[in-house]
Image (cartoon, rainbow, N blue to C red; front, side, top):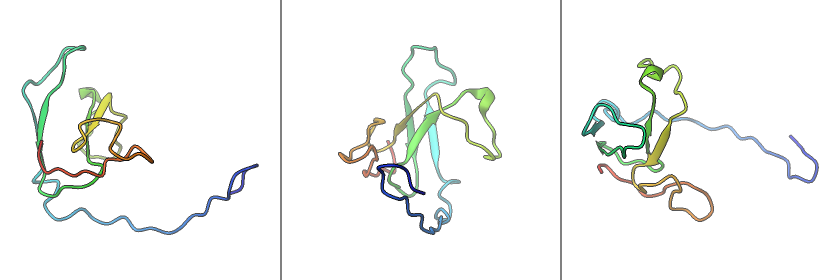
Length: 103
């Protein structure tokens, strides 16, 4: 593709790798309550067997839940698990290079 005054966009093939065995089935997330008021802070703890960069936890409306994972709705809010923010820890982008297996 080419746009006025911009460099061409070059596409390359890539491969999406499978998650390591047991990663999702061994992952947990726990909150202290099952529901929260609008202005209430939500606290959660998590545990995963393998730390991965840019891992995040999202908050969704219960009615948007779809256990088939056919489509993931937009979260109401989210946070990087290892950076504890949405800004990340990289100056050139908003990625979170830090990794954590629990928090």
